[in-house]
Image 1 (cartoon, rainbow, N blue to C red):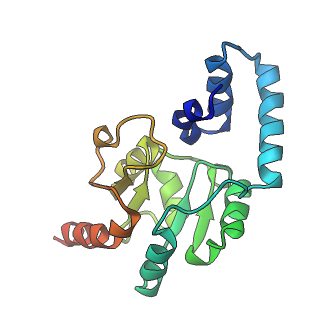
Image 2 (tube, rainbow, N blue to C red):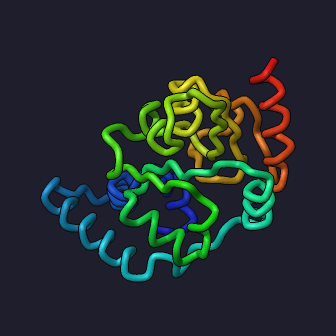
Image 3 (cartoon, one colour):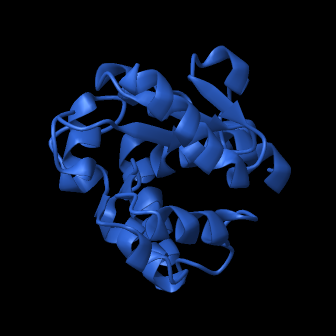
Length: 188
């Protein structure tokens, strides 16, 4: 299977990535074989988690700006936390976040509101703005009655314009102004 053909499968989790990749090569895996392939895939990924991972342009500068401005930042990911935390460490990004909460760290994963609440440390008692790139992010924000900002260049298999986010950005550096806009709407 061609690597570029895999891109639409990336944000769906390892099991879906494996299943859809094999199906694209006209191979159907039994549940037992899929379990074994997924286990091996996750072991290999964990061994060198940041080999091909880099923050998008502008992410580090923007997170620095937000943190200096007093923002409380958390990671709310459907990637297992036992993988997300080492990835953030390898990318030297952990210090930006108050919490890094993966799918294995909480009873509910996105699109459930509980995942967002666990990640931010409260149940919406203060404004929450979810920044993401796909439907689970927007839907979790809606479930939590939170605002959502979606970047247009992530891993969404659906066009981001169809997801119902409050704001769609083309550049991560636009997040501070999007937050100001949404904060104005929240306080109004």
